Length: 172
Length: 68
Image 1 (spheres, rainbow over the protein chains, first blue to last red):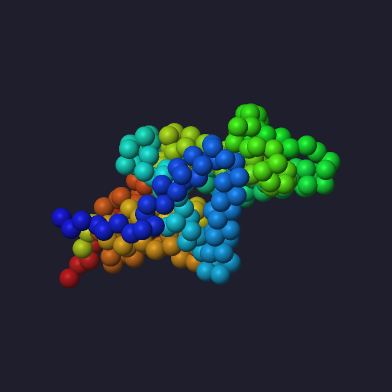
Image 2 (cartoon, rainbow over the protein chains, first blue to last red):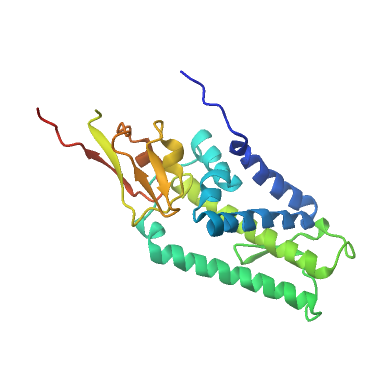
C-alpha cells in the first residue's frame, strides 16, 4: 500500500502543545496565540473559506490525533442541536462577548483603573493562580493582563474541545 | 460503480473538513467555506466520511440501478 507522505502542516498539533507549555512557564508567550486568532480571519477575509480550520489548525489536529489515532474518542454522534445554526451562532456571540470582556479588563489595567490579576480563568469561572509565570516589571501591566486573559480563553476553548472530543467525535 | 454514495446535508454541514481528510478518494471538497460537496462519480461509498462527520450531516445513499 502506498504510504501517504505527510505534509509540514500536518505536524501543527505539536505547536498546540508547545503553546500551552510555553504559557505555563512565561505567560507573555500567550501573545503567540494571536497567530491562531488572526490567520483564520485572514483566510476568511481573503479566501472566503475556513482553510485555516480545515488544514492548519493545530488544536483541531490535536483533537484528531488524540481522538482518532489514540482512540480516546467515543466516536458517538453529537446531539443535533450542537451543530444547529442557532447554537453555533449563539456560542460564537457568547465567545466574542467573553473576548470583548477580556479586552475591557485589559483596558482597565492600561488605564490604571484596575490592578493586574496574575491568574487565569478556566471556563470563564474557575480562577487559577498563575503568578509564577510573570515577574512584575517585565513589561507594562496591560500586556501581561492581556496575556493572562488570552491564555485563559485559549485554554478554555481547548478544554471544551477535549471534552466533546472524548464524548462525541474527535472534531466535534 | 459502487453501490452507495455519500450525500451531505449542506444546511447542517459546519465545513470542518473532516470528511475531506477522511476520504481516501478525494471525492469531497468544501465549497466556499460553507459546506462539503461529494463528487458522486468519484465516491466509492466507503462511508469513512459519514463515520468521521462530527455534525452527522453525511448520509450514505443507494445508487439507482442503471439498466441497459
